[in-house]
Length: 336
Image (cartoon, rainbow, N blue to C red; front, top):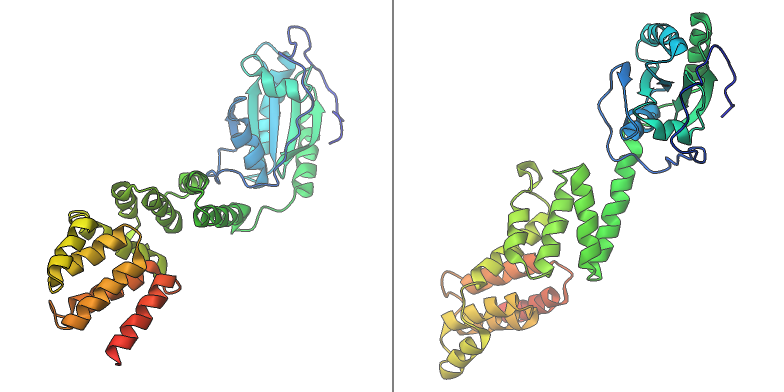
């Protein structure tokens, strides 16, 4: 950025930056947290709101930042001229006014020691500036130059979408290797920006499921928007949660196994044992129990064992080793 290229009347007495800091180094290679709605053409701002009102806003439209103070005569003289020019441009450029008495931090970081000082931001960074009360015609030339040199606004898709896609990939990778804390943090971050992101909701639900918090997993799963309740991921998780709910009230596996040892033809106990084994993560054993039940009675409860086995396959996923083993056992039984 060229240093304070234009000079007019300035105020120096009574203003010292709260702290001299290095010049602002803004890095906007990453997307802003969220795209804010269009701001007013002229607005007051603060040090705290500077990023949203100036840095992020300048990614869409160039922004002039007027550092001023109520006691500064040249500031009061410049203000109507700069506001007039900005309003003339009808949205091609915006003005943010910052009272340095109440908000000294950003002015100090930019090295402002005399006011009025006007900085132009475009593309998320300072690109030009002028110092003092310059004539309206000079303000207009300055604004025209900033508008002409401003980079184009981001494409409609926006880099925020790319960032979210990258975050989702990282979250899924963390989930796949069992790093539940990292996965939860990333899914949570995505949901802060996109509360109805169905993929992130399902991911967070799976985190709780893997952590053994089935009730919390179900509560999160239930927040998936109606329109997004489709697809393999949704169907698989729905089936898995359903199976866990069914198994919640069953007897412990040891008790069911003892019942079967006493009476191998107790088909309800065998069916319940399959559900309990699946809930305990013993998928192959669960499939084997349902196939064994079918060998004894394929018509039991209206083909209930085969239907439940298919639900298992849906919940486990087509490529799960237990699904592959279960399908081989089922085929051997049906076509023997």
